[in-house]
Structures are given as C-alpha cells and as structure tokens.
Image (cartoon, rainbow, N blue to C red; front, side, top):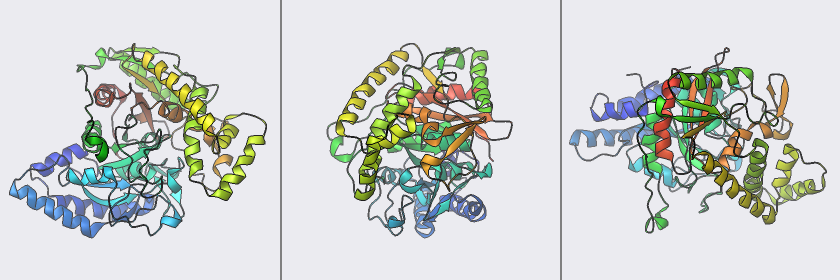
Length: 481
C-alpha cells in the first residue's frame, strides 16, 4: 500500500483493519509534501501540529474499538476557499492573507465529524476566479505531469495535490468548471454534484460569514478513484442546519446495471465546433472512449446538444458573471458599466457586459435556463448519460502575465479566448446537473484527458454507478505522474 497512489477508500479500510495508523499515514504524507510540493506548489498552508494531535486521537479511538465515522483517521486537505477554524483561509486574496476563521465551513465540519484529519489547504486563483491557479499570496501551482503547464483552476491546487500523492482526498468547488477542468488536466476523478446537494456555507467567495448559497456553484470531491467520490459525497451532502428540520436528502441510486452493455450513452463530441473547436489529440481520446464503450456492448450514439453550446455559454454568462460583479469594488464596477455602450455582441464582450447586468437580464436568463433544463431532462428520457468534452485542449502552458480578456488558447493553431474556452463547463453547469469527470488516458504528448459524464438532476448516486461502468472501458484509470 502506497499512500501516494492508494485511493481514500483503500486507506480508510486499512486504517480500520489497523494495518496502518492515522499518525503513520499523516507523517508519510507530510514527508511527501516536504519533498514533492516545492516543485508544484499545490499545498500552500499546513496545520501539522493540530493534525498530528487529531491523528493520535483517531488512533486511540480505533484501539478502544468504539464507533467511528466513514473517514475515520484519514488525512486530507481542502481547497483554500473553505474556511477552516484556526487555519488561515485566503481564497488567494492578499486582503485575506491573515484571515483566521473561528469556525469551519459547514462541509469541512462534516468532514471532521466523519473522522477526517484536515492537515492543510491547497492553492486557488484569486477568489477562485480563473482556470489557472496562481495568486499574489502563494504564487503559481504547476501541473505534476509537466510543470511548465497549468494545473487548471480554480481547484488546481486540489487536483495537483491528489495527482502528485500529497493527499488522498480533496474538497473543491465548481461554478464554471473549477472541479472538472483541474480533474481533466491532472488525470484525477472529480464530482460536481447537482446544485444544492452540498452547501456552500463558509465558502469564499462570497464574503466571510455569508449565508447565501450562490447560484450554479457546486461543491464536491476530487480523488484517485470513483469510490472515493461517493464516500465523500455521503459525508458532505445534506441541507444547512436551519433547513434540516424540514427536509432531508435522499438520493436515489436507481436500478443497478450489471455491465457496460446495459448502458445507453449519448455523446456530443462533434457538437459546438462553431463556438469552440476541439484539439485533435483530445478528440481522439474521447472518440476512443466511445469506441471502447461500443465494443463493450453499450448503445452509443452521437446526438445533437439539447441546447446549442453558444446559447448555453451565453446563459451561463448572464447567470454567473453578475455574481462576480456583485463583489467588485464600487469604482471598478462603475468603470465596467461603460461596456453597455460598446457595440458588438461576441462572447467576450457579452461576458464583460454581464458583470454589471441588471436584474432584468438575469431574470430573463433564469427563465431561459429553466427551458434548457427541461430540454436536458427530455434527452435523459432516452439516454442514461451524456458524454462531453471538459476543455478543448489538454493542460496548456502557463499564461498568467496577461489579463483574462487578453489570453488566448491555441487549439490546433486556432486562437480561442479564455472566456470562450470554458464553454463546455459553463453550459453544463448553468443547468445544475451532476457531472463526474474521469480520466480516459493520455495524449501522444503524455498529458491526461478527462471526460464529462453528465446525468439528470439529483441522479448523483446513480451517476457514480454508471460512471464506474464507463470507467471500465475508459482506460487505465488513475495513473501517477
């Protein structure tokens, strides 16, 4: 058993069998962080002393033979957007460099209550607002497969830490691909749950102390195995305390399918090319996955998107970008209102205008979003899952010197604005659906390629089961960089 490559599920089982102690496991991970982390800068804050004390308590409880939680004694880290009692939480912002929360975020508290030993925080871009991970507080996170390339974002530190063996389990968040694209870039598994399943209380952004559950933002695990995603979801999912008196969460796992031959799979790999091209090496891996599923007996069919990709991206911009605008300084916000008078309506300009959008614009986008959700639900009457790209390329070279609006991604020689490159993640995220991202193998250059496995709203447990069947045909699963 190697703690750097084992799944969280396997480590929890080994802890329960007393094959390894929590303290031994934690010390192994802390040693690996000391040796490996300087090259990738994924783990940015440690709480080693308190974590070792917590691990010791977990070991004594194991010896005593009393009841334990589903993560009992498991050391893990969390993304530095989650407030952690007594451990600095910055969300990559210089103004929060010394922010020391007095309570845990709700999801973090649930992890601890389940027995997890939180020993550190992983890097994120400024206020989780980029799909590269760098900030003025902690610097840049590098991809462990190729340190000249990005680890993605905004859960880039989380995915890089899991891939590099610095932690077996992570808690990330995703409003526009922030779990999915780092999982894709780093070759790990990620779950963006259905919206509302895992509460955001204690997540920055919003501001510290916010009680608002932000639209579209979802919170979920990253790990080295599919079973780990279900294990973590069972711990962190559920209502906020004041609503728990009125409802509880009971996700239906649905009927069990025995093999990939039982699957009805829709693919949309050829869709949306007028908005966002797909690199040939990424497309080849995705088509290889579809072919593997077909050889395994699954019914696989390329279908039209229920909502055109450009329309889905535009709706995401109208719903999510105003949330970003709400947190801007008054003077910056006032400057951006000038975009209302700029002619044109390309996706980059539309995204800029959305920052200062009126409620009227949001309300119309929300009404359109409900129609989009109905269109996706109708598609799921005929198919169990939909497979879609995560990003148009594998991990790309660092590009942090230019502003977001200036950055372009090279997709086989075609320049694509970064504000358009996340179209697949945004269009799927705005309709609030659960998504499992799983590795499908690597490009000829050796870079991981992931796929979005999309399911109906609130089908999270069933989706994890279906993703396990797809994973059989996807390739080798997790590979250590």
